[in-house]
Structure formats: C-alpha cells, structure tokens
Image 1 (spheres, helix red, strand yellow):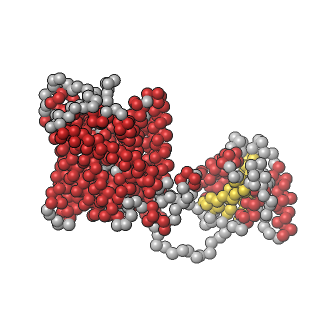
Image 2: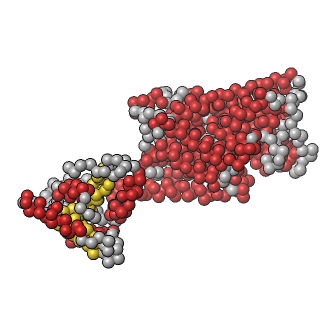
Length: 626
C-alpha cells in the first residue's frame, strides 16, 4: 500500500505539500476549465429550436455568462480574504445567514461535487467510446477504472495530484488558446468571413419556433453550467502555501481569466465560422468544440491532439471535487454535522474519509446508471447555483454586518439576484427532466446533518462531567471468563482474571460437550490453588437444553449484574489472533458476536475485555505457555 500511496508524511512536512497558484489550476480549476467544452454547447442546444436566428444569439448570451462569471469572481475573491480558513459557501452562509442556510449550502456543495465526479468521468469516457466504438461495452468498467486512478492520486496528497494533472491541463489550455488565436486571425484577415478548413454542418434553414424571452433565459441558464467549479478555490484555501490568501486569489484569477477567454473565443468563432449545435440524440452528433477545431485547423495532428486533450481534461475534471469536498466535509465534521473521522487527516496529510466517501458515492452513481449520467446533469447545475446564491447572499450579510456599503455590497447583491434567477430558471426548465430529485436530496442531506449534530450534542451532554475522580475503596469486580475447554488460551485468560477480582469461569453445556472440563478442573485449577493457598476460580456450568451458547451466557451476565449492584462486572473474552484475516473468521465468530451483544446491551456496569492468544504461523501453533 505504501508503494501505491507513498510514504507517510509527518505533520511538519505539511507546508511542503501545499501548492502554488499555478498548481492550483489543475487541482482546483479543472472542473471550471473543462466546462468550456460543454457550456457554450449547452446554450446553443437550447437555441436549436429557433434555428439560425437562435444560434446568432450565442455571442451575447455567452457575454452575459462571462459578466456573471466576473461578478462571482469578485465575490469569491472577497470570500477568500474574509474567510481564509476555507469553506466557501458553507462558511459564508452559516456565519452570516444562520445554521439552516449554511447546511443548505453544504448540501448543495455535496450534491455538486458528487455530481461533478460522476458527470465529468462519464462525459469523458463517453467521448472516448464515441471515438473508439470498440470500447463501448466496457464503458462502466472504464468509468470505474478512471475513478479509481483519480482517487488513488488524490490519496497520495494534494501536491501529487497537481503534478499528475498539470500536463493535460497545460496541453488543453495551450491548444484551445492556439485554436482561438488562429481562428481570430483568420476572421481578421478575411474581413469577418473566414473559410472553414472543414465545413461545419449547415444550421436549420428556418426557425422552428420564434425567439422568446423565456427561450433566451433558458439558453442563458444552460450556458451558466460553464461556471460550475469556480467555488472550489474558496473551499480549498488551506491547500495553498503561504501566503495562502494571496495565492488562492491568484489561482482563482488564473482560472477565471482562462475560462473567460475560452468562453468568449469559442462563442465568437462559432458565430464567425457558422458552427451550430447538433441534436445530442442524433447519429450525426458532433460536439461544438470539436467541430470548431476542425473548422479552424482541419482534422490533422492538431485536431487529434486537441480532441485527446479535451477528453483528458473532461475525465480529470472530477479532480476538483476530490480537492474540494473533503475540506467542506472537514468543516462540517468540526461543527459536528458529519462524523468526526472526516476531520482527521490520513498518513499523506489528506482527509481520507472525504476522498473515500466521494469515491464510493460516485462509483454507486456510475454503476447504477451504467456510466451514462445524462439524467443527472440538471442536478449538477442546481447544486452549483444553489451554493452560488447562498454564498452571494452570505457576503451581502457579511458587508451589512460590518456596516460597509459601496461596490462590494452592490456586486454581491447583483450576483445573488443573478445566480438566484438562474437557479429558478434551471429548476423550472429542468424540473420534469430530473431536477425534482433535488427537492428530495438536498433536504435529505440537511436532515442527515442535523441528525448527526443532535447525536453529538446528546453524547456530549451525557458524558460531560465536573465530578472529580472517586477514590473511595470499592469491592473487587466479578470477572466472568467464558470457557469452552482447558487450553493455553483458557489458562492465560484465567491467570490475568485472577489479578482483577473474583473469577467465575463459565461453561455452557450442550449435547456435544460432555463434562470433560469438570474432570480436568480439579487437576488443573482446584488442586494447584489449594497447594498454593490461593482461592480457586469458581467453575459455573450452565445447562442449554436448546443447544444455544450465547443466550445462557448473556442471561448469566445480566443475572450477576442484578444480584451484585455494588460491584463491577468484567467479561474477559479469550480469542485466538492470527497473522491472517482467515484466522479470525475460523476461530472468533462466536466471541465477536458475544462482544457485540455485551457492548451494545446498554449495561453500564459491564466491562468487556479481550484476552488475545497470538498464533505463531498459519498452522495455528501457539506460543509456549507463559
């Protein structure tokens, strides 16, 4: 395992594992950057019903998306400065809008991150199998294999994931920027009428339906899927090396700047080259981005490498979730809304519970939907924009609480209104396509958070005490040792039990037992005890007419507890412990059930202890008696 995940890292090495602003782009920005491959196309697909008249609107619509992106960018820069501990939407909403708003934002982030993994991986693998149809039967397996690779890389640490994904990220950005620059130059040199190297498919000859405000708003909301993932930097401020705030804001600037240029360039060139969306269900479907690349560069080596880079970044866009969700889960665990294991870092200074949980949830979605998660895309956008809206509203509350007015407050208020309207439009337009599930998932997550919090509060109230340690002498405990036969394991357990108190060896008689233990007890226990002048442990024989082993023993333990209310009851369970997992399955099934029944029986005066006997090898030879 160490060869796969790397050597354990000491806490003192944490600073060296933090990332630079440049490395923050592949770690926290792949989701946002990869959305350039489908954001403009999502808007153009909605506009298909309006024919060429609708496609002509893609440039102003994407400019509107970029304007909202810049508003969110300004807001998240302020969020990073105001909340350098990270947490993004959850921290901002909880601090300024209350616990309910914070939990709602957290649920939205969890939904967004899980959907991002499933959708990103399935989209990338879907594009791969489209290019290589021979791999189509292996689609679910390829999705799970890619998920496993990303999870393992992230378990190695944030820095390792940044190094691993830097090359495909740089290749993706440079190639797309190169295509955009080449395309813009052709537009300028030809006076706005470039000749495509590979002609795109012709658009609709006439409008199927007239343009309407509702259609334009729907297209805008679809294009806004290009903004998913930009909140990840505010969640992962703690991943950056010092000064963390400055580096996080710089990384956010890189990500948003690149994304804005890519969106603007794709929209401009699509209009200039006459590239239109095609029906995703059509056999002739080709993505807008690949069609545009072919129109600018042809289908030669640049096209092949560009498509490969797009596929890689789409697949690896899930990495943003692996960097963001564990840190959100850590903050929730710190506030007692998730199990405390989510707040603990593993050997590689990674929040292992968060990475593993995200992997399992995404794997479940990929398996259930066979690697085709198109029906979950509406949930993807809804989770993101619900988090955006609550974050913006939280920052408005932040400025009001600090009694600050001016441009920051206005920007956040406008961003809250714009993202809130977009959220409502996505909900309304995608409700029947699966968005209604959000009304079940998000409240369900909030209820789960609150249930966890209530449990921790209840436990804290129950175990908190101001009473000092009681040094009043107490009678020795009654020590009950379950015994099956006279063995070295039994001998070791009884020797230890004698140091604790009044020992009672309990043997349950069934039809298979006979009374062999009674015959050996006198020679091995009673006789030696008399010779040494020490009290002998009591042998208790329990009849079991129905051949049950555990029930008579449990009844005896409860009877002793009731008969001796002033004494502690200790149950010492002998166990064989071997170097292999199979040894526990072969030897300790009954003792495991017995410990579980006693531990969860609710008896506070019953203490359960294990006395292990270690086997030397796979043949089960025990060590010499001591």
